Length: 86
Image (cartoon, rainbow, N blue to C red; front, side, top):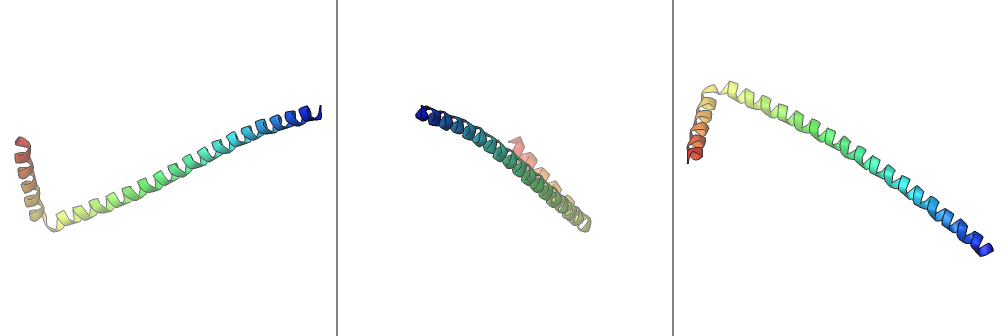
């Protein structure tokens, strides 16, 4: 009879352990998702900031050398058009 009681207690403990592990895994999954989301937001902010800096630098170069910029744009368009035509 004592063996059966011990076995029942072990089965109960294993069931509770299984529940606790499930909760732990769910918590770990939630934290991982939050971490990835936060890192994604940070990376997006960095890329956006760098893109704005690059666009500003590009605009400044066009303002400083408008003739060269027009000539380069025309040349690239002409070469690209010829490549696409083939």
